[in-house]
Length: 426
Image (cartoon, rainbow, N blue to C red; front, side, top):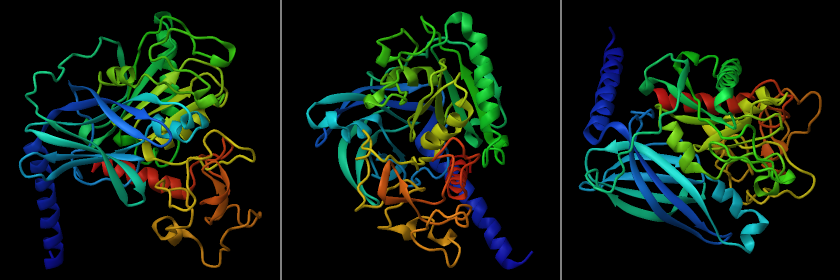
């Protein structure tokens, strides 16, 4: 064996040992869940602690603990209280951040439930939550000293709910674990939920790069029971008693399907180890929603459900942005400042385009890229994305993050998904 190969081999062994020691030195096999409230308006963001819980499973990563992929409107850092060493880092987004860009936030104060999760610490730690101010800068919102022996940390077993394994291909620390939660299914509709969850899983695994890495994907169906069948349709004044209280018309957008009951969602997800949460809604009405490192939610019975399922998971799992745009003003068209580079990997304002897909564009491609027949199959810089017609750009003319007609993620989006899969499983 050549000397360089020996050195490289020893380096990989060293890294594996360091990762294992790092995790075992600071964390155990359970999860620490911190529930809090985002409170404020368009100009103000405050965080108020609700509770801390120990949950039975940690399904997340055990390597790369003090790094992340620079995704999310917020991030949280966990520091060892003695050495102040950063021992865990993760990013996330929220409904609250989206609401702050809506007209209502200009005149109203509101609070939104939010939850973060990390491995349960063996020693006292300091938790810091920060808000993104631009692509590489953050502002601290909250700081809290957490002791694992605190008598007020809740050690409550999750509510007993039937769970069916849809696919189990690897140990949780080597897999993407997806908790699929039933919403709007009564006890008599449990079999229907399992069929819908199976269909969701099979469809997801036909799309790249999930097909390539299906041996690393575990999917669990959590059969939460709703008192009433179906989903609330606030536009028709129909409100139903369901497991997590989801509804259409979020921020007055008819097809935006979400739930504000984040704590309930997490209580159900805690029945299994999980990296990602998918809420499956028992409705034929078209719609869905997906928020990075938060949850995805999709209507199960609509004729376009299979397309929407993949689109929303692109949001929640890989932090992909919507690539579509509106000719008329929309409730979310104030989400992006074209004077700043967005953090999402599949849109750009060109402010820091070197950080995006510039190296994938074929030589000679015009910038911006006109949507001609010749260019429609090429990677370029097509104007329109992030709900904006001007000043925001996407990698290809069409992609699953733009339309339901696109059969797949574009190569840039596929790379972002693959990067997340590898980050969580290696």
